[in-house]
Amino acid sequence: MDAVSPVEWAPIGLAQRLAAPCFQLRRGTPVRGAPPKERSEAKWEPLAGAGRPAALRYHRGPLRRFLLFALPSLVLVMALFNFALETFGLVSDPSLLARLGGAGAHDLPSWVVLGTWILEALALAALFLLAQGRDGGSLWNGLLAAWIAWVFRGPLLVITVAGLGGLKPGPWWGMVFWWWILYTLCGLLLGALARSAGLGRPRREELQA
Image (cartoon, rainbow, N blue to C red; front, side, top):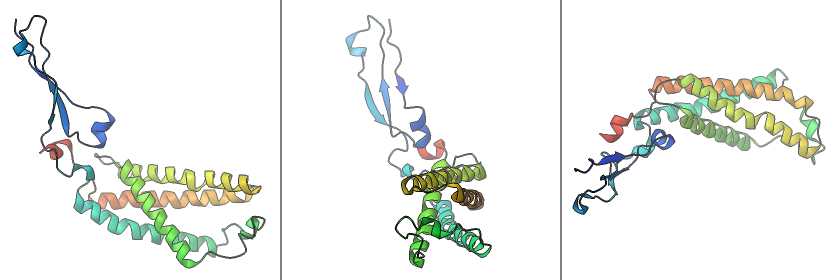
């Protein structure tokens, strides 16, 4: 009786979606009574294309163009949005934080505000790249990334500050809504820039070529 031909086992599921596997398990499974010489031991063998820089998961050219335009655009949108809020008097009164040791008695330095916007832009772009899929849907992925970030920037931030400082959260819920508008605009901007830059993950065939 002949032995069963070798079969290949490769990782599946989430690992296959996030990154191309570098190795596969090749082994032979003989039937009962097969001669010992026909029995093969399991061993790991490299897949075709292993060793290439597949961990990037994005084509370098479109990714570079996307980041080059996305980061300054996000900072600009945040600056304009905050300027509009201050112009129309929609910003919450900073004196509401006075009981927290005079936190609302002075404004933050300009470089701190700018650094905060840059940090937010980097975080939003990184979260968008994690959510971005192979087959389009850039606008939806942008909204998904923005709304996930808004959960921590909006409701959870207000609840945390109000809870630790013993403040009434009522006056701050209006800012939560304006932050949602801002992050929604940022998400749509990320999706539009990704689509115009041709941002997309290389397909499995390209990784193994």
